[in-house]
Length: 399
Image (cartoon, rainbow, N blue to C red; front, top):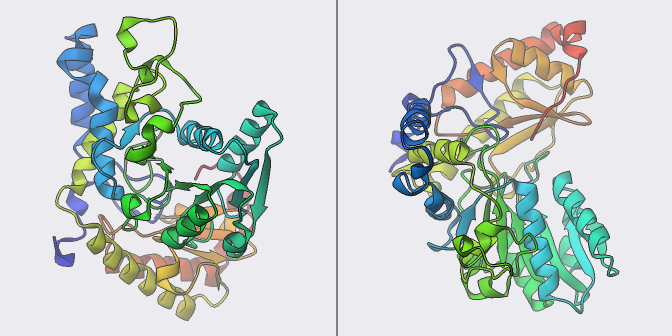
């Protein structure tokens, strides 16, 4: 496709009067999803009952949808499977990686990684009780910290706060030269930037699908395992769906001889069906076009914010090649500013301690949306309407 064919706003159910700059946290609803879910509930479940597992091919969904995601992350067919949450997939990848390097005891990550990845690593290390160590480096120090003591390097490609982007190829090459296993978290990359995990040659990649892939809240996560090592990756969570013959009901676990071994439990059919339908908005879309358009939108946003809102400080890399598809600005009262923006129909989000964050998704955003959003942001700052006590009240948020 060409840039002129973006955005595809007509494919999304976007509320009237809302400029949605938070697709990097939760993608909007594709219009075709409700009808598809209704069909799954009323016909496939309601009429077929348990026969739906075979008649509607529910059991095949994790691999079938995995192949749809594989196209967007540059993975070969049959190397991605869906299911569970991103935290579970991080645990699976890291546990497998540590078993592949039993003589090494160090996991390297960085302080820009999303906390749940770090928490899962800490929990796994405590459970193993084999003397493993988690080293947390500054993002810019990761390359220097990779040496022959490292068992696994576990990083998120795009920083959830600033949008800073790691060089996947360079870091993976360094990890491999040092004999380490490479794990990439693509939560803020899949559907946002061009990816080629096969060319990168990493052993594992994981990610969620409710952000740029618009799978909906709680949409299942994915895991990629490089095909040549899939049979070396022993699933730490040996659920029955990862068994080589799950319906033989053997008493001993035997993992499948392919990516299916990374399945754990029963697939979430309703969530998986919503995701499968949502991924149709990507039909005919070239990720290179998405990237070109997102850079154009984000560069426009930065230029207009810096010209009209001098109170804010850019917290993302200025060079577009060094960031993902989001832009963050720092402001001491960023939380209140974001609440005031949301109240006026411009939806972004806030990350502690002082970051206001905006995602750029060319599937449903255009240049006019960007200018309109900056105008509202300027008005909120100039009027200091963010000082209203209503905007100081905090509630829980997700990434």
